[in-house]
Length: 228
Length: 228
DNA sequence: GTCTATATCACGATAGAC
DNA sequence: GTCTATCGTGATATAGAC
Image (tube, rainbow over all chains, first blue to last red; front, side):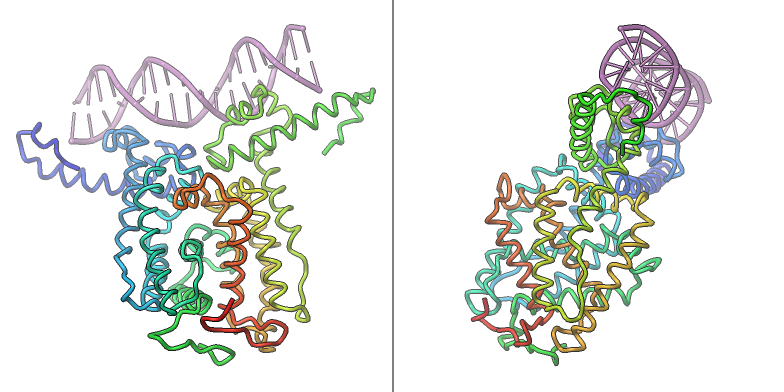
């Protein structure tokens, strides 16, 4: 990230701070613009204006439009991976799924523009993420899928297709970030507050757990009008 | 759609056929390009090349880039509305939800690019669809929501928030069109076939019905490892 | 290290030849 | 009705002044 210090003899501490601050401004602004218009639809000019810097500075700091875009994608993948810790057959399905849904909703809420940036990349056929999808992410899904299947064999949940289940969790949680404009239009709100988010998390958790017949710590779950 | 016939004296049937065919080519090509790159990211040049026509002809037939885009959005909204027939409290929740999920999956499968076009529009803040979201679509959702609530009061399903339920159905069904690149990357397939689609429909239907505690024709649903 | 000025090219749209 | 030629604008990127 900063290997070119050898070229400059003096420490230039003040400039390093300036650079760090400007880079942060650019990254924030770029995530905003790219998420709204996609890679091609976004212009460096618009990003520069949003960051309050001259257009050339954006290119000076980031090298090129593409390098900036790739850097943002990588940052989002990193956030994403941070909440995907390992699971094993010994874990409790209800706990794992509940925690995962909650974290996904929280991440979407914390970084809606990153989520939309990723969504736009996938919508466009994932030209910059082909490798990631076919490699790292695919392996991650296969690992979890195997655990879900073992849970089903042990009678801890229904034998549903684990990949479709993962897609269900992804789509339903990200929806509130990616389709925010639609959600707000239909609900008539200006923004979703923390209470809404709590309610949505509880709703999605409940549907997924009950829908997959997840037993809590070996007990059969309550069913019927008294449930929840 | 064709009110300017008064200007031409002769019938010009052949040209009408040419026009109809060219317009169709343009609409198909434009849906492809707009869905990949969004409104700003798409160029009339690229649409023209995909349609096999000179750039000027695209603008001649469609008037402007924006008019073409709006026309495509309207076409998608029309397809969308076609499967949203009225429901009442007297209907069976299981039947209504099952049919709706099936139709949504089928529509996404028939028109994946239309679905992605819509998604890109929403991702970008829905600049051309604000009115639709706050008006027509919002009313549609409120109508269904009221019926869901009445079903819950009658004990036909759990008292879940009906709006979150509708969002769940939308997001989980459209996921396979909108995030197709991700789905194919992770599953390692070239395309989802009809068997996959059937399986996904069955999975989503099962999770939603069971998750919401929908009783089939008044009976309590089966639960536990023998279910399904 | 930062920013102005500019090179080069593609954009949407249109005027006018056929 | 169709297509070529072109206009004015805004794109990414860079060279060079400070």
